[in-house]
Length: 318
Ligand code: NAP
Ligand code: GLV
Image (cartoon, rainbow, N blue to C red; front, top):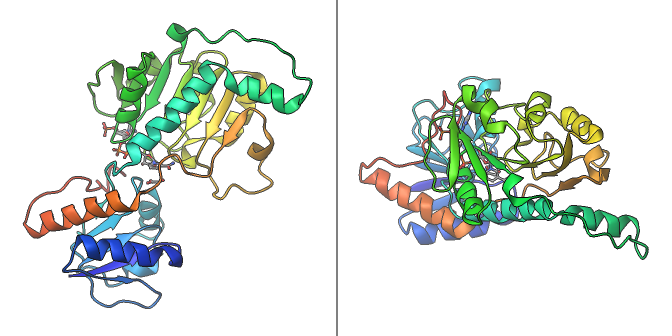
């Protein structure tokens, strides 16, 4: 069995190759390099160039080393026919990412609910002379948290927040049942879901339907002085609307892990906005061992003629 690997960083490749060959002893894994059109049965990919897909119609499946497939689907939108037709595109399902997302979201929610962000700011701005001023925490019962996207990651995040006794709502395309979470489904339910939320956690996939969804109209439906936590994609957020909402106080603060342009350019205002906390796309990292285990199990299942989870619906975009 021949597996073609593409990781953006050459230095990662040997460890991925070793892990894949350990999990699939019959496999020979090679790192793709420009000009390589030699035969392969499977591809394991993160941020591949369009050129990799030339003459790849014989692949049995393409596995993405992440949960989001928007970058790959964007290649296809820009140049239809780039992706080999009829070859299943398979994304990671959790593979250790859901709990990382839960840790991040819980940290952000508690930080804002207990107003630690404001104490951090006071200390930073008035080192040695910070006023000794206890702030009233936000009332727990009124600190309604909304999780947008209730898939592999969002459903787990919503459940873990609800397990802390917090007030949690969830929003998805199709109706979900999650213990302790009030769920809403479909675009017509979005206004009710948003109504009076104090904190929004975004875990939607980036698709033509969801791009720009974190915008002025959405912010207007939240509680005054609400918080935004974007953990999904930068394309979801209209950055100018966030800046405006922070300036007017409509939003109190935002924590952003993803950006329209990554790495975030040095001149970008987010670097210098005291109410914006940024992290470099680390809310859920791809973990090598669980990712490889999952891909290996799926390759074995396909070889047995079984169906597998995580196949991307190209029309839906996720
Ligand atoms: P997923 O399992 O495919 O779940 C997507 C969820 O979003 C589903 O609940 C889906 O609804 C819902 N959804 C999709 N389109 C919608 C729409 N138009 N309106 C309402 N709900 C909609 O995806 P996942 O594995 O949870 O991952 C979510 C995203 O997280 C990824 O696409 C990626 O962009 C991002 N991510 C970021 C990082 C990071 O480090 N920052 C790491 C991993 C993933 P249905 O359930 O009804 O289909
Ligand atoms: C990372 O952003 C992923 O989609 O897995």
